[in-house]
Amino acid sequence: MTRTIEKPSKDAGVARANYRLQVLDAAEHAFAEMGYHGVSMRQIAEAAGVSISLAQYHFKTKEVLFGAVMERRIMSINGRRLSQLDEVEMRAGKGRVKLEDVLRAFLEPTVLLCRDKVSGGGNFALLLARVANEPLPYARKVSTAYYDPIARQTLRVLQLALPDMPQESLAWCYVFAVGAMVSAVSPTGRVARLSNGRCDPD
Image 1 (cartoon, helix red, strand yellow):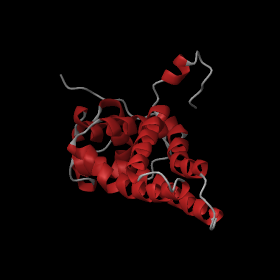
Image 2 (image 1 turned 180 degrees about the vertical axis):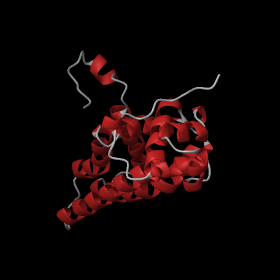
Image 3 (image 1 turned 135 degrees about the vertical axis):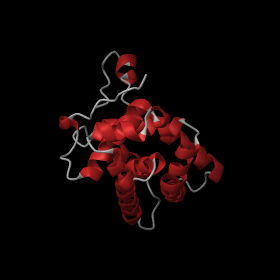
Image 4 (image 1 turned 60 degrees about the horizontal axis):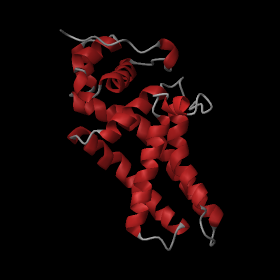
């Protein structure tokens, strides 16, 4: 039986300026809800309200479409991260970089986007959790292309904050920080349940 997917809520996203954005929005929603292998290009086109041929005109394959979905979010996030990391270094001058400032520069852009319901941040938060926990070729490509460069830059600045820490320990700290961030922004409601409603992830 063919599964159908719901069209993204109009209230959850920005105004669709063109067909390409419609397909990107529908794909992000579908990948977040059903996973990469749980949805077809045809289903995404249907949810976007366009023909399969038009969807394939803009994005030749599902893998290309997935990469485009991730790229538009990650490039925005990484741009803010780099800007904030540069500011951290400039403020520190010749003094030691503050660890708190480095962590804020790395974590804040993702957290703010994932909490932005108007731009569909909730979909990206769920998709981010899927990508982080699926050791599959498509996820590895995204990680290598978009996450590794900013990770190395963050580790470089972290080393300035913690000059005596071995590089391998810094790498583990970074991985744990990413895991904590993904868990925190995932729209599961778990932190609210565990805290009896005292913690509001939004």
